[in-house]
Image 1 (cartoon, rainbow, N blue to C red):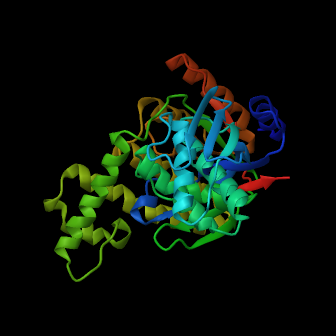
Image 2 (cartoon, rainbow, N blue to C red):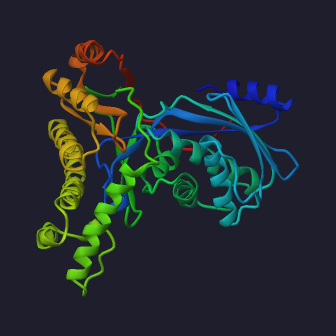
Length: 387
């Protein structure tokens, strides 16, 4: 996404090129799905696809915002209690409100934004948008010193909760804000401790295959699964009152077994996936240190099976993409993101890449009459101001 494009549109819309330009990336997650809101581990990285925003204070108490991609425009007062109706502007509105609550004295501003993070692909275009404005508004109205990067992450998460209706964890915003070129991050979603891992898999490459099936996480499917996990954790807490059980992160396999008769089979399946996924993230970290990409790939396939059968966030199209990957000899493949559509993430040997891309494109098109989008992954930097 080019800086010049948003400046051009900003000038056309507001009659000036005097603006600051900020960028925040989408993300991939190598492994660790639906574990963030359960206090577990995730293993994301920022990507080169991003949201770019031109922003300038306008000397009023009014926000004027234009989305290039949606060709949509909205205005609202900074202290408006309701905010705009359109979802893309509610992200901007929510972040501004959350930063205000954290001490940033935000006043009126003009903005134009655009991005090349594929919508509905599980690459967290919404978190990229939130993080872009959290970083930019903090820089413009508090000289970059008012809130920390973690405050920006939490402001984005709170925006999802309060203004969008998605009870997400912190992984997406974290990856967008803290990303570093050529490095993945293992994040402990309970303690917020994290560690960078160099990711330069010699002989392999990461590629996303976008099913082009759109998903909507603001509805009940995402939140229903979170409630399943919370019910199991609550049942374990009720059984072991002497312990502090906040999320499934605090639970063991023995705990799950102990409450099977007190929970529905569906809730137990959800919890079983989450505990297994926590273990798989740690296995992958150890495998990467040793350069054992075959083990990494095996864990990815296990994650897909769990997401499809136990957590039930897959769909026919994603399962088919995973099946084709197996048949092509791809080292690892799984659903990436919240599910209900979006991408598979694939760890592919260089020598198999061309055949895999050609085969999966042809077979998916033949079966569903949809041409999948192939997205090569390059791990990039997090939120920043463009000079």
